[in-house]
View 1: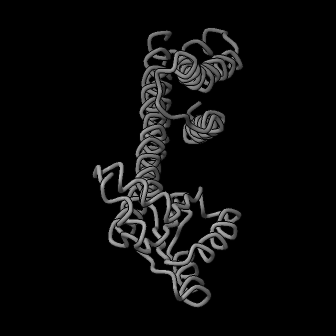
View 2: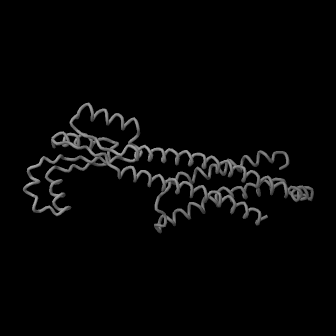
View 3: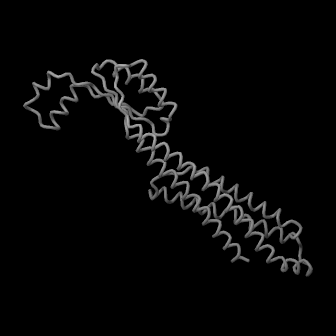
Length: 259
């Protein structure tokens, strides 16, 4: 009997382990997509510095903006001289009116399509002198990849939840029915029926606590040792425990009168 319970614990623990790997994998890939999106700035170009300064002040308090970088014409000229070693052309370059640049770095997926349209409308209406340069194709592709990732994550969670439910119910039914003859002989020999109920409860407790506990312990150790590049919401662990409890209760209902 102990071998059967141990087998069930191992099976449930492995399914939960795969489920938690799914959470971590989703968080990791989603972070990569968001980082790529955040690293691609919108560049505003204007020959007059004042509008860009006003824009920087306004955008720095916006939730979708991570941070802004204002590059004045003097800084751009100096960078050109240093980058291309144009020391002899410093006097000549000083005669030209080099535009200033405002780089806007957004907070990944928070910069959604409606917010993008709202910002562009605001810029075109309030600051028509500002030229907008942004990689719209890359932005659109990144949002599509993130949306596809979320969809795949949702269906993967649904599949694992159903698979875990069926597995727990099937294993509990299989081993309980396989052991049914033993308990029938046990009761006929004078044994108390409540012993079986107590044994079922203790085994169920093992199935509900041990797999979730071991997975949480492994996650905690991995995080303490800095083995994982991302974190996962620890609320998943009690949620998994509740789901396992529900599955065990459901298996008891299916056993019904054969118990």
